Image 1 (cartoon, one colour):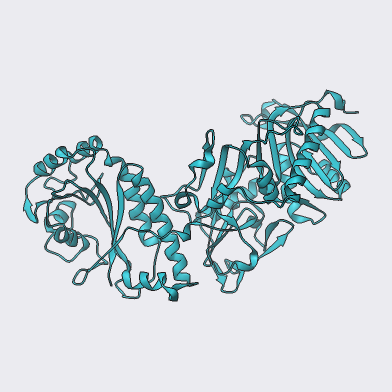
Image 2 (cartoon, rainbow, N blue to C red):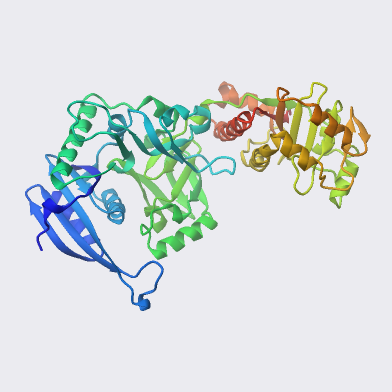
Length: 550
């Protein structure tokens, strides 16, 4: 059947390609989909067809006898050495995989798409994290507003990449049809406008888009300024020494983009992460003993190896060189440029930094024994021997300790033991992850109303309390001081975790630490602490971390 081309009204959502294999592309698109092609139109630089699919509804099995019928439109338009493809979402996903496997066609350069289409006010921004997964920082963000690029922070967002964006198009007399806001996913060379067009208008819009992109390329495409606060693309030659691989939940991908078998494999690998071994001079690594070699294929990086999971967009690889592999690209995070400024190094000589609490067989006994042991809880009782101090350790705790000074400064103190007492112990982000997560989660109690209500229900019958270092019964005096505080009084979130030593920290921050894998671990840790501090300052509090001098 001949497709009545003048009667179609597609949405303008296109993938922009470069290359000469027009016949190979159209052949793949026709052959790769499910269902029968029931209508077709072909001209010299145009192929359009409709595929009919019959499937049971998502809520019914095949035996129910119900059938949903859909008709999927595909348009392929050639203009010189460029090709524009408009097709349905599942076909887009298959096309992206096919583009990674051949060399005759390539996506339009992502940096040109960024330069041409994300220059105006940004209305929507989809960010994807390349940082090590942590409970105190989101894996991804979706921002919406009138100009969301102004909300970005290098501290908070330096370990994210812009997956997609929707921004105001330039207002120019030569852009008659491309007006308003346009969305783009640069890594997939995808561009969309939320409007339908007849076929003649559709082809004219495609021509305007190509002219706009070619003009931006001729002028020397530069990333928009706000994107420099995010992670930037990296060259494969800079990447070395993989140390961790994670697999995302397959449900983050569009429906239908994974087979049932591949989805089950992804779930299995996600729940049981594979063993990873990196190489000190290469981006290659082994995954459960099998070698994986990253290779540049067109404008993307392909992971060449035996596991089928490598062909999905679910894998993130972390490198000691400070880079990450995510969705076909290597990235360099910006976050390592910003050290955490609120370290406080204390002397723990005579204290067991590997032990958090006194040895006791019940929560009440822990409270009773604070002050007669060498644990970190005992150190807190000794160090905060002025003002009003209470222990809140136990189920539903606000923090391990809370302190109010004579100046009415409130401190919420969270305690975690070090993993080693060696004076040359390695930096470990994992040693801080749990306690930082707890501190951020409990920021809700910074509000005085929430805090007072919670503290009236202590976790044990006789909670430990002190005034100027002297044991007292109950919390009555502490609560009086809490009630006397006013909005301008300071609030601090204090994390006591002495695993990082000042000796090692100063070495890593000095000339001797340059290029050290340990420095990269410190960067990961301080990025996490900066993120947590920003959460605290947003509630008019501050974050301080107590570590060890030795």
